[in-house]
Amino acid sequence: MQTISLVPDVSLWGTPSFPHSYQNGSPAKVQKFTKVLNRRCVEAAVMTGLALNCSINKKSLFDRKHYFYADLPAGYQITQQRVPIAVNGSLSYSLCVDNKMSQMVTKTVRIKQIQLEQDSGKSLHDDARSQTLIDLNRAGVGLMEVVMEPDMCCGEEAAAAVRELQLILQTLGSSQAIMAEGQLRVDANVSVHHPGEPYGVRTEVKNINSMRFLAKAVDYEIQRQIEELENGGTILNETRAFDSKLGCTIPMRDKEGKQDYRFMPEPNLPPLILYDARSLPVDMNHQQVVNIDWIRERLPDLPSVTRAKLVELYGILPEHSFTLLNEDGLAEYFENVIKKTQMKPKKVIGWILNDLLSYLKQHALTVKESPVSSFLLADLLNLLEKREISSSAAKQVLEELWKGEGKTPLEIVKEKKLELIQDQKELEQICQAVIDGQEDEVMAIKAGNLKVLNKLIGLVQRATRGRSNPVLVKQILEKKLSE
Image (cartoon, rainbow, N blue to C red; front, top):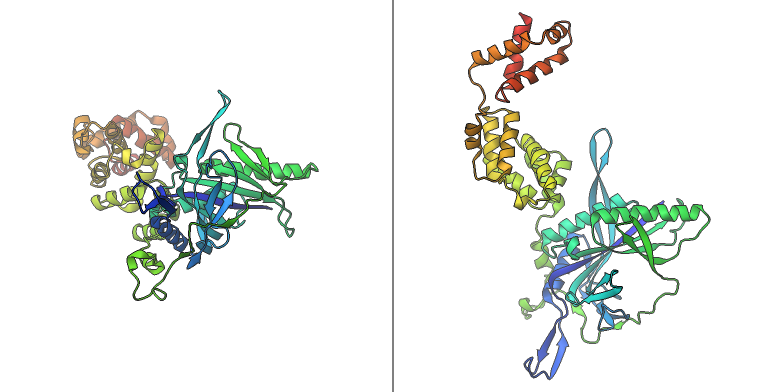
C-alpha cells in the first residue's frame, strides 16, 4: 500500500504578511518599528479554512522557526508551530476512472491544519556558471501552509486533490495559485507499507511546481521505494527533489538527525484573536477585528457547488462540468453561448469541448485569447440549428473564424457559398448521379448491407461541398433505392 500526504504552500494576496510599520517617527527618522500582521492574510486564511470545513481557532499563536539558509536572511521564519489558525478539515475531490464509459469517483482527504507563515526567498541555481543566485522579492510575503493527512495512494489522486484546492483558492480570491509562478507549491510525503502494517519510512519531495510533475513525482517515488524494499534495501527518511528532465526524484539531504529549529514564541506578535457573532464585544470597533461569521456569510459558491449547478441546469455530464471549471473562463464562455443560441446545451458542450478547446490547446491559447468569441460561436450554432448550413459547413466556417479577420459567420457562409441546398429537385438529381456511379454499393445495399448507405451519403456531401442536409439526403437515397 502507498500513503501520500501533501503540504501545499500558498502565497496570499501578493502582499507582505508581516510588514514593518513605523511608530514615533517617519521613515526618514525612524525611532522604533514593530512587526504588524497583515489583516487580509488573516481573512484569506479564515476564508480558506471555512471552505475546507476546518475548525477556526479563535486564538492562534505565532512562533519563530530558526534555520540558516541563504534565502532566509533573518535566520528565522515566522510560523504557527503550536496553535495554527485552522484545524481538522476535509477536501473532497473527484477523478475520472476510464472504463468502457468515463466515470467520476469522489474521494476525500483530511486536512490536518492550516497555518500562516512568512515566505522565504528563492534560490536560482546556475549550473553553467556553478553559482546560485538569491531572489528575495517574495521574502516576507504571506504564506499559507495546508497540511493534508496521508489519505491518498497515487499520483493521480494527489494531482486531483491539489487541482481542487487550486480551484477553491482561485474562487475565494485568497490567491491566484498559479503554480508556474510559484504562488502554489507542493511538498509530497510518500511512504509504502503492507496492508495492516504501520506506515513505512517516508520521504519528502520538495517544491513541486506543476500538477503533471506532482503526479509523476509521486508515482516514481512509490515505485522507487517498492523496488528498494523488494531488493532488500531500506528507505531513508530524506528530502528529495523531482528532476522533470530525467523524470525521477533525486536526494537533497537526509533527516536522520532531526534538525533543531529552536522554536520560540514570536516576541513581536501577540496571540491572534478572532471573533464570531457570539463572542464579539458590543463596544468593540468591528472594523478592527476579524469576524469569522462575517466571512462565512460571504463565501462564494465553491467549485463543487458550481459543477452541480451546471449539471442540473443544463443537463450536461458530470465529467463535462469538471472540464468547464478546470479551464479558466471556459464555464463563463459556455454559459454566454447558451444565452445567445437556440441550440440545446448538450449539443453546445460538444462544440465547446471538441472544437473550441481542442483548437485552444493546439495553439497554446487561453479562453480569453480565443479569436472566436462566445457571440460568434453562438451565431454559428444558430445557423446550424436553423438548418441554414450543415454540420460540415459549420466546421468550415469555424476554421475561417479562427483566422480572426472580423467576419461574421453569416458573411463567411455567403462568401464561401456554404448555404444548404434548399431545392429538393437539385438534391435529388445529385443523389441519382451518385447512385448511378456506384453500382457495387447499390447492389450491396439491396442485398441487405445497409451500412454501405453511409458511403453514398458521404459522396453526396462531397459533391455538394457540405451543402446538403445529411438527414434529407438519407431519405432521398432510401426512397430511390427502394424503387
